Length: 398
Image 1: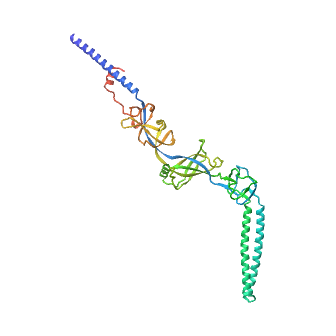
Image 2: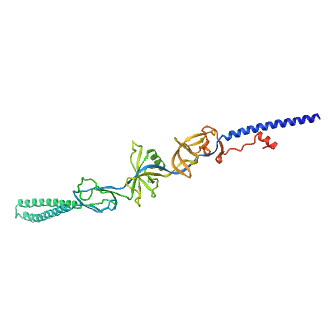
Image 3: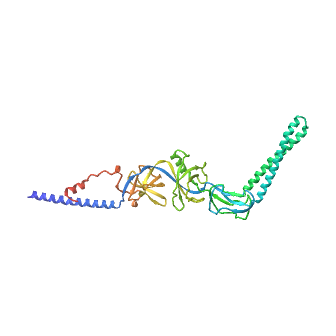
């Protein structure tokens, strides 16, 4: 009887102690859960790399391949204009006419002088031929032959001078019709019909060619060095896209076909140029916008998900886990381009770095985080049940 009482007392004590133990365990677990609830749950991924064609942006300006000022090459009154402002004109098309009468008279007189000089030259050429025979046979004195020779030489020189004067008069007469030197769109008329013009008057109008068009831009020297490194040469033709100031992308691509031979010391940039087709006349001389120039070869660069980045006044950043699994804020420099919702990164992180990809809004640098999902090769090992879990399982407690 006494033995049974002792056993019952021991069982009761064991139950009481077990109950107290489990109650304390539950309190500890609850405290742990509360602590965990205050720890941000995050997902983690490794920074990967990708081969892409690099692109660099720059401000740009549209320029006509040919920009020609139309000038008067002789003096006179403007009699006519043969175009409307803004018209497309072709090379050789007559644009203006300068009063031609005085130049017609000058050309007529120059032709008469030339014809006279030719006649006299021809006459003395024949005389000289006859006098050569006569002097050989001693029918005339040598002095008479020398006189005819001098006359021939003088009229030959007069003929050459008259022919030159006639050509010059014809040239000036041709200048009375001012023609377009190139194909292009003509601008505003600076000097209207009825005014007296001279070669020093200045441009009567301006013509800008429109097909093709040049777009010039200044790229930073470090970006130029990157292009040369990636393409392994400076002398390659690269694709270029143009974006209007409105934000619309031009539908045709251009080709970068020129680079300056020096870096501008004041700006640290190099001038480059691309040639663009302009079949719809959308590119206009003097317009501004931006260009994107692409490398010919691909380059291996780190990439991070856009969702893993945040921004503040200092720039774009990500949270990188250190060796203790504590997050630290790292600012990154992106390349201004994305692929599949991934930022291409030039500075800040490298392939293999572990970054937080979600749950980052509540993360505090240097404070613990709770990793709920990691990359396949980084998953946390499965934990074996501890002693408290074993006791609860044996007692059938949840």
